[in-house]
Length: 402
Image 1: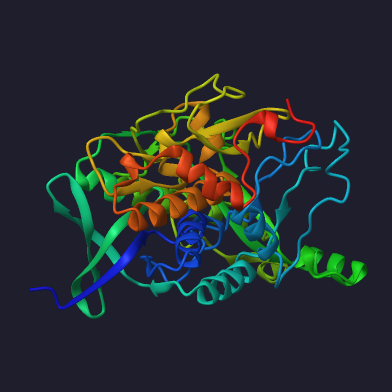
Image 2: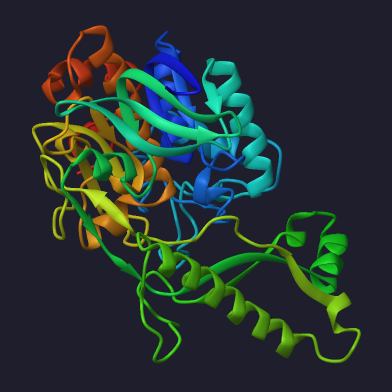
């Protein structure tokens, strides 16, 4: 027998930005909603993972394409810390790639704002709680076996959202999934006298939060020669990825901290509390986003996300990319929606994760109210609800868009 047993309307696994957005969207609809997180920090890679750049809500040529909770979270990320949206993002300099509707933020400040958001929405949080196994009834997910300091328990729900980033719930429920290997990389925050002097000169504390990036970019540039790639769904590879990254960071300080007093001038301030994989595992959905689909119109589009690397490219999000095959009662959100190749690069990042999280949360709440499964939910019904939140579905819906 489980040591505790709770029942909700909607249950969200994973409290990254996708899970937060899903839980908030569901709770705001009036449903009893719970959010389960294996760490004690909400925000996922954006906070515990120190990926402190909120990717753009605009297309890079002056048009906002993503709205709703994704926009709300961007501004929350700087409520209690530094950062700001460039004032001229609507008429950007073509040579200034940072001039978009985006911001950098303090990860710790973002956690505080997200805590406040979740409490205000009435989401019930289960922190320091590990998702172990889905509770199945035939092909339908009915809940999750979880474990925390109270022991092994069951959290049940009428609809679930997998926002784990790794499709952990969908995979263990028997849904087809795809995986990808990762270049080695590590982001951290460091302190330096140089940064302190700059902050004092500018009368602005922002330079105190200085990032250091080790290893490969998203395209693999900078990957240590001869080093293999790593799988984010292999337990030993996760350990090796983390330790190898930290070893490279240690080498940086061995080189930079010249002399016995160098450690006082420059030193690591904060290390990521989770492995910073870019792509691990995602569902194979009813629809899969693939290379070359930027600008393509989908009959079941439920949102728009901009390409954070390429200006002018916008992707429609088909509802089918959130629906796993062979499993009912479950939606995917965030970087584990059905995408592959370059499309996965577009959908895995913060603004897209937040947006698909909101879509999943609204869809889950509608499925509960209509006593159906997300795969049987009418897209028109979902779009009607999303439209009331100001969400656009096609490029033609954007003022000045294509």
